[in-house]
Length: 76
Image (tube, rainbow, N blue to C red; front, side):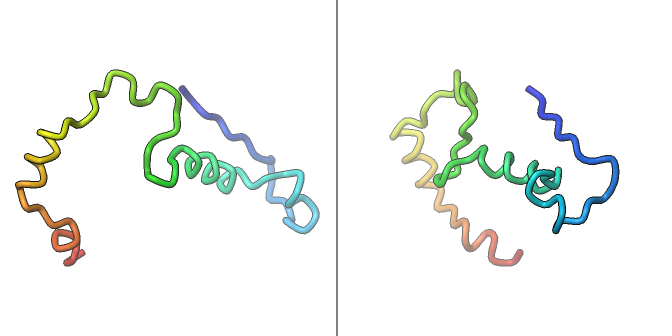
C-alpha cells in the first residue's frame, strides 16, 4: 500500500489554519505512530499473515543464548 499526504502550497500561520489545515509532517507522524499498538505489534491488517508463531522450544533456545539486551545497548 501507499500513503500520500498532501499539504498547502505555502506556509500557513498555525493560529489561523492550525485546526482545519493539519501540518502534513505531523499528520504523517500520527499515522505512523498508530501503526503499532502498546506492545509494539504492527496493527496493519494482514501484516503477520504467514508468519509462524514462535514456539516454546524456539523461545527456550533463544533464552539459552544468554543475550542481555541492556548490556548490549549499554555502550550506545
